[in-house]
Image 1 (cartoon, rainbow, N blue to C red):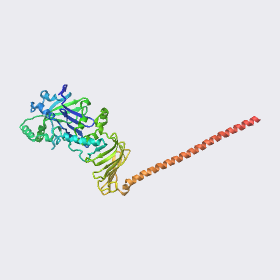
Image 2 (image 1 turned 45 degrees about the vertical axis):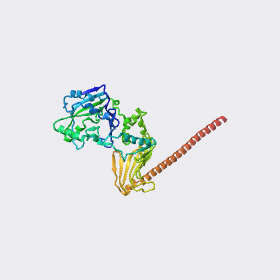
Image 3 (image 1 turned 180 degrees about the horizontal axis):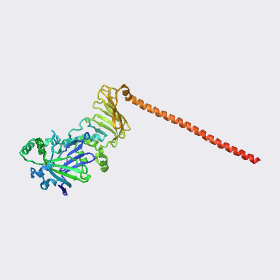
Length: 462
């Protein structure tokens, strides 16, 4: 059933960023969760439950407290619409679709929904943001890549879990789940209320549990497909989605927002449309120093509007060199070298090589791998649409060693100089020949003129 809300209170909405699959669910005055794509594997998602005030926390329960949700509304969609009117008034203005049916359970041993363990603590978040911003204004950035990147973040695969919960596991009551198990086992079929949305071709937004967290857990435990009333918001233009990233950035930990920001495809468009956005403070420009969470140096390099340019160097937590790499306005150039985190073999804290990647015109051409003892284990030559594994003969090891690569570059430079000298010599010879030809032409002209003068004098005398 399609319907339209014209005088909604705007206290219930799904917000979405199409350019980087991120969503938030708002209940009451602010978002109660933020969800974004993990970008590692298809379907992997990150979920955080945001701080929520008491009024928003109980808004849906208070709205539904006098409604009987233990009724089968199959083929009675108009009756369902009338029953849910108090809840529908909380929606923001726009077009919607209402349906009622059983949801097929995923045949897996996992939970019925993505349940984060706990909700973020507002004071802890504000403390970490203050610490992060203090360094950020000095062009120092905390790097949580290898330590703490997923702290307080619930990771899940959307293909394994049918629903997303806005309540945490700590906020669920095991006794209430058991109560519903008993009720359902006796024949009752209380339904859950699900909220989702679609925007143009993006009709795969997540399905959020508005009401029925405990019921759905009970259905899952009993292996029974749950009946659900599904409210779908039909967004007709991007402006109706209204994901407030400025607000989100103030409600989650810096490492969580960093993970989102570093993989956000829509940054350029967003900043173009929001030139005064406070999120611009995250754009990296100039010489940047990356820090481990405890303040020790993690890496350093130069950026131009978030694009790496020049030489970069990184360190392990023990102070040894981790890797060195070079970029030309975002494109990897020359070679990148990764070192083992063992005892340094020279005064500059370089350990034994682990990997070496050689690039040409921004494309990876050669990969080499060494074990911790310094013995080369593999060499791969990357060709268009294929990778050729090279047998490790002594000749091949030499051909693809860094020393040989340097010799090749040296030889190429010498060949270029030689060609340049040969070209200069040819040009010099050609210029000499052309000069001689010009002199010869002038001599011919002079000879002709002399002959003409002689003839003129001869006839004049006669």
